[in-house]
Amino acid sequence: MEIIRSVAELKAKLEEARKNGSVGLVPTMGALHAGHLSLIERARRDNDTVVVSVFVNPTQFNNPTDLATYPRTEEADAALLRKAGVDYAFIPSVEEIYPEPDTRVFDLGPVAEVMEGAMRPGHFNGVAQIVSKLFDFVRPTRAYFGEKDFQQIAVIRRMVELEGFDIEIVDCPIKREADGLAMSSRNVRLSEEERAIAPAIHRTLEGSLSWAMNHNVEETKRYVIDELNSFPHLKVEYYEIVDALSMQPIKDWNDTKSAVGCATVFCGDVRLIDNIKYPERK
Ligand code: PAF
Image (tube, rainbow, N blue to C red; front, side):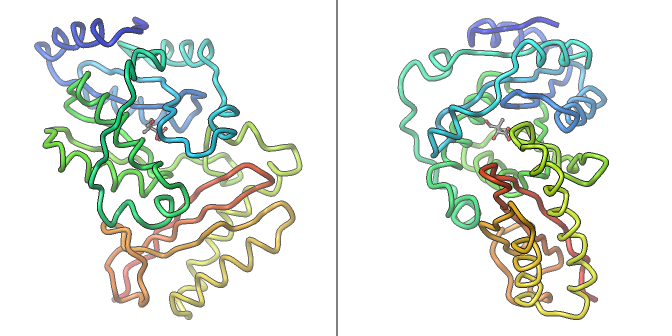
C-alpha cells in the first residue's frame, strides 16, 4: 500500500490505475473501525484498484468542538488499511485539499433540507464539497458509503447528478457491535456508562417495527422518542420517518413503499445517529 499526501501524485497514480481496470473509492474521516472495513472489503471485491481517503473535512463541521474532538488515529488507520489490502491511502493535509477556501454552494434541494440538513446548517454543503473534490481527483468507477449516514447517501447522489459524475454510488449496510450499537468513530468518546446505554437506540428502533404494525406514523415517532428519552444519558434530537429516496417525512405508512426511521440521539454529549427500515404496507 502506498500512502499519498499530494493531489498531484494521487491523480498521476490513478491515471495509470484506470488504464488497468476499475477503481473503487472509500471516502472516510479516519478513526477506522469494522464498519469502514466492510466498505473496503466490498470495494476490494468489486474493483481492480482500491483507494481509501482519510481526511477530517473541516467544511462539514458546523460545531468547532465537534471538529476539535473528532478522533484522529492516523497510524492505526494506516495499519488497518495495509492489512485490508488497500492499494492507495490518500491522507492529505487541510492545505492540500483547500489551498484556498471552497466557496461553492451546491443546490442540493429538499433531500438536504430536513433532519441533518436542518440541524447542522452547511454540513451537507461541506460533504458535497469534499466528496466532489475526491471524485474529481480519483475519478473512481464506484464509491462506497455506509447506510448509517442514510441521508448523506441521498445528498451524494444528488451532488453526482448536479456535477454529472459517471460514478456508481454503492450503499452498504450498517455494521453493528454485538450488542446492536451502530459502529461509529464517535463511539470511542462514550464513557463506560454511556456505552452501556447506547445499544438502547438500536433496540428501541427495532422494537418500533412491531409497534408500527398497529400504530400510525405519528404514534410510532412518539413511541420511539418517549422510549429513548426514558433512558438516562439519552436525549433525542429528532426522530423522523421519511421516504427512503426523497428523505421527506411521511404522514401515512401508505405514502411510500420504503419508509426509513432516522434517529439522532445525544448519549451524554456524543451525537449518535442510526436508522431502521420499515417493511412495505400491502
Ligand atoms: O461519512 C463520512 O465519514 C464523511 O462525511 C465523508 C463521506 C468521508 C466526507 O467527509
